[in-house]
Length: 241
Ligand code: ADP
Image 1 (cartoon, rainbow, N blue to C red):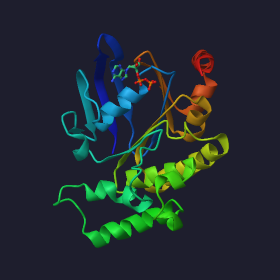
Image 2: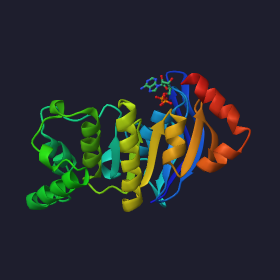
Image 3: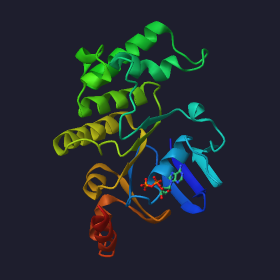
Image 4: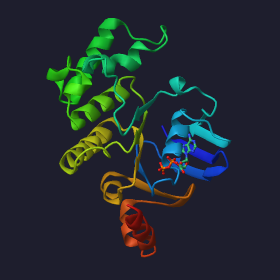
């Protein structure tokens, strides 16, 4: 399902975090939102998810205007930098959470929830950790559980906010490869926020470069390398990182 962002603006007490942003995210593609800290990446992601409202503009999923839809009705998977797992719940319970909290008429039967959680545990290759608590997991394992939780309701859109930012280099590399493989298998439309240009170029089909609440450029990773004027953007980002 494609995502269209039309004329989105957001002001926080006089500060223009997003200024008339227009973008399209093609169906089945993995897009990196790249830019220095404070350029509006997270705000845009949260508006797409329905976690934040915009002051102006519209968000479309396919042809449908979802601007006024509640986050719960958008069926978007969301992964945060700091995992946001529930500490008092086991891995299994964390993964099932999104399904258990669906309204009764949309909630699958208990047996199906159990089977779906088992499948997801296999997929993230952590079947033996089902009954552990988040404090007993490494950072990489926690982020895999967070991904499984985001996928439990079978979303067609997956949004990731600096998903690997808190992990060390080796784990980050493994998880990047794994996310790409997962994406290629399930064909979500995915957007991930990063300020790491190497990660953006390696992982994505399309890179959106943001600066001060506006879109600086949109391109394929290879074209970003090839365009001499892009060096400006990378010098600029490199300086900030
Ligand atoms: P990025 O993800 O690119 O680092 P953000 O979208 O998080 O940028 O933030 C853009 C700007 O908006 C920042 O200057 C930030 O301080 C501000 N901002 C974000 N959320 C809020 C908020 N809830 N209240 C006030 N200011 C905010």
